Image (cartoon, rainbow, N blue to C red; front, side):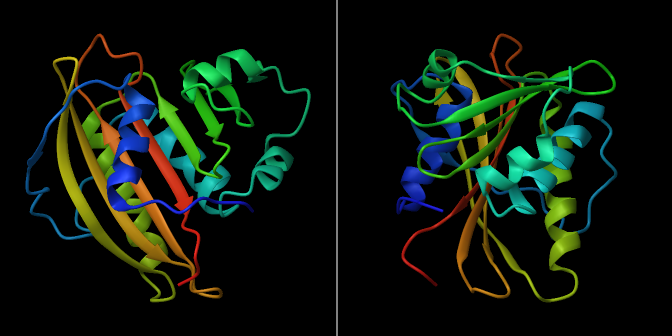
Amino acid sequence: METLPRSPAALAALVVAVLALPAAAQFTDRPYLDRPLGDHPRIGDPEAHDAVDLFSRLCVSTRGDRSRAIEILGDGDSAIEKLDERTVRQFQGGRVGGAAWTIRMPLGEKLIVEFEPSGSCIVRAPRVDALSLEDGLRNFLAEIAANGEFKVRRAGDDEKTVDKRKYHLVTYSMRLPDTDQKVEVAVATTEAKDAFVQGSLTYEILAGGP
């Protein structure tokens, strides 16, 4: 899979751009929840649960491989709609070569799954509880790290203000057990009710080896 190298700052820009149009912004440090990885409540928001589930199956289990994700999505399911190229380019800042689908979940909400030209795999949740999504990702990462094969650590925690909306970005660093490739996983959320997307999960294998 083709990937492009990104610095932590570039990854942060990518994830927040999933939620909002670029604008003048400022970062402020914010310590994340005091609970250690794996020590958190059950997910209370169904959309957060569904978003993490899709992220685990289409992004993490496939290692961000678009062709494998397409095989999982299959063909002919009325709940899955492939977005046209123009819409995808609007989502992805005008870049060419990406792909995206909307997936209607059992409770009726629609989630968006995207693959960027760089290889990033993204799940967007238009309406989601921020803490539920953050905790859901933490739960999932704790599960896959429990046997010691996957090495996961929290790498960053920032707040960013874009167009007067506050966005919370938490990033994790993970190494794949067989290839030792480094992966960046991130969750970005906002509680702003007027935001088009309130939460996103991003998976990206970094280029350049271990």
